[in-house]
Amino acid sequence: MKPGRGEAARDRATEIPDFDAVFVGSTILDVVGRPATKIPEGGGVAFIDEIRLDPAGAASGAAMKPAKLGVSTAVVDDLPRPSGFRKSVAN
Image 1 (cartoon, one colour):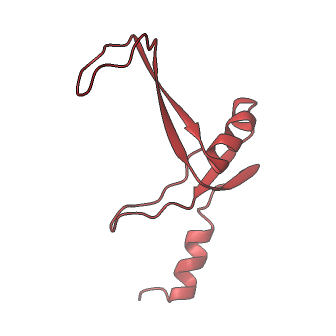
Image 2 (image 1 turned 60 degrees about the vertical axis):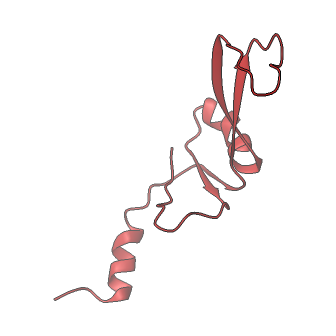
């Protein structure tokens, strides 16, 4: 027999990990390229030596410092998702 809706929800609730801090808000990913010696003419291409991805936004930006200090953190964003896109929590 299948569990009722309430039983299934309780089972899922026991699988949620514990975090020391949870940050809720916007999440943005900044793409940083360097060194930028010039901006190419319209439609042109310029090569760079390094590309770095930096989390930014109210939630992910704020979560970075405690995470670097070893605090167990989670981020919950408020971005709209395409249909079928699964939300996830990363530690």
